[in-house]
View 1 (cartoon, rainbow, N blue to C red):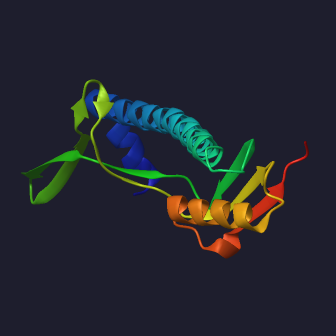
View 2 (view 1 turned 180 degrees about the vertical axis):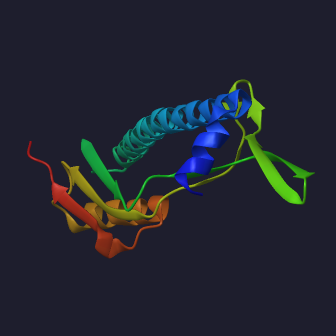
Length: 159
């Protein structure tokens, strides 16, 4: 579209209003998307800390382990598949699709949550000096997180 046609199109008050509404809508979508990403990052950090605390709690109950600290690293963050309501409309041989997230109690409805693959696990434990305790810790971590043993590092904690 050349410059003259664009100017002529925007001189029409209705077209100008539509263009302004579109620009405002795009700006709001961009700003809204940034807030949502930050919220997802915080949720993921909370989930990681919760997983680590739960694993520390259960490992400390194994005979001979003692006090435990756990760090879990992931390849990526978790992803949520949301439910969408899709409306299709046809106008002048053009088809448009309107996608809107299904909301329940003010939150988007999550159909499925995909958890990331574990990159590795570090465990420090007071009783990790013995081979039996190390083997028990390794087996428990491997079974809990579905991680191969070679991705688990276990060290004796300083007393």
